[in-house]
Image 1: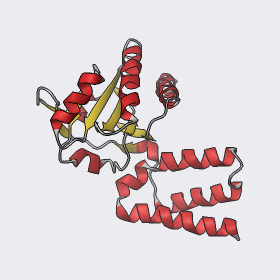
Image 2 (image 1 turned 90 degrees about the horizontal axis):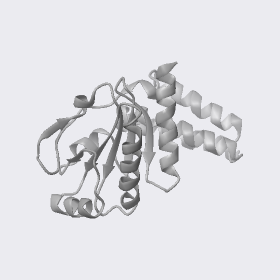
Image 3 (image 1 turned 30 degrees about the vertical axis):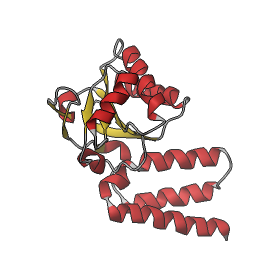
Image 4 (image 1 turned 90 degrees about the vertical axis):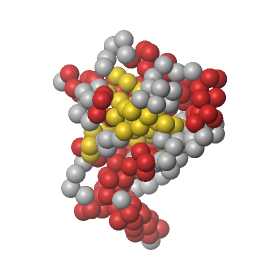
Amino acid sequence: MAIFNLHIVLFLAIWSIYRLNLYNYITHLKFIEYKLTEMLMNHHVSSLLTTTVFLSLASLNTASAGSVPARNFKLPEIYSQKLVELRDYKNKIIYLDFWASWCKPCRKSLPELNKLREDLKKQIDFEVIAINLDENIEEAKDFLSKHPVTFPVLSDVKGKAARLYGVSIMPSSYLIDTSGNVVAIYRGFKDKDIHKIKNSINLLVKNKLN
């Protein structure tokens, strides 16, 4: 009975996401799939539950999460105020990171992403694009003076791009492949996450070569 109730709760939760915003629903499929697989591997849910949820997903959507185009945006670079668009980085693997100066995990994530970017740019066509959500841009600049980075940092004072991507947690990040599709979503940041991110990027490169 408990498993049956879980089926209903999960189905209704997914349907609610779908009704609120189709794009956000689709881009979250990979995240849902990852979490379900993780739970299954840890024996927290039955294979029947996992199958039911996946069937629920299939009944609500015909596109795969990996085929969802990343939405374009146009935002000012935080220092020069030069307008930058996502499409400016066409054919690159992009790690799109939403952050804020008050975000404690961002103190770890931005320096780690900077190291990752410096390492990978020597090997592949890769870029990190950070989008700051501070209403006061000076607070973001103060943060960057203490945690400097070499990748592009854009300002989204009005939260337009954040709404496009359904950002609700800091940091929230989106891995975009060379075809411009969102293929992975990351919420929050822990020390071990940088290795998962790097592995996901390497897998993208491997799949493209094959």
